[in-house]
Length: 94
Image 1 (spheres, helix red, strand yellow):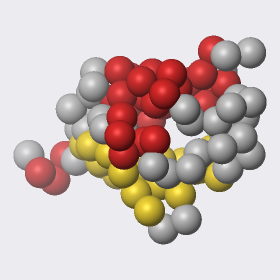
Image 2 (tube, rainbow, N blue to C red):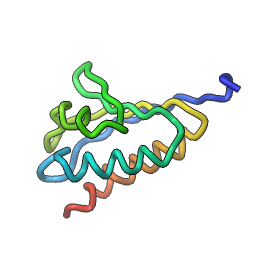
Image 3 (cartoon, rainbow, N blue to C red):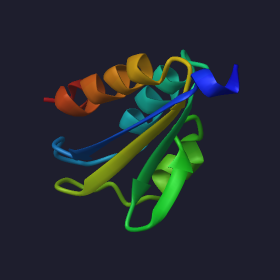
Image 4 (cartoon, one colour):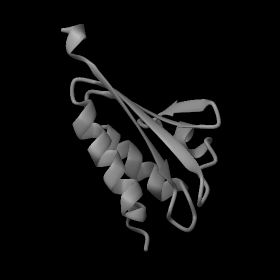
């Protein structure tokens, strides 16, 4: 079954005014927790699990930052779509 795992990548720009602070990080963790895939958020060579709020708060995801999302797993495309919706909707802050 390991051959069924898929890896997808996408890059986003943090568009919400205050970046990835506690509330957006909590939304990412909540969304990531719904999927079996491993979801990684990266910036400037550092990558953290999207299921770790503390990790997300360390990546300096300020307004305008370029963030890479890498998802590995059986439901990778669905997971990436859920994460993309958060970035595209500015984490529902505006």
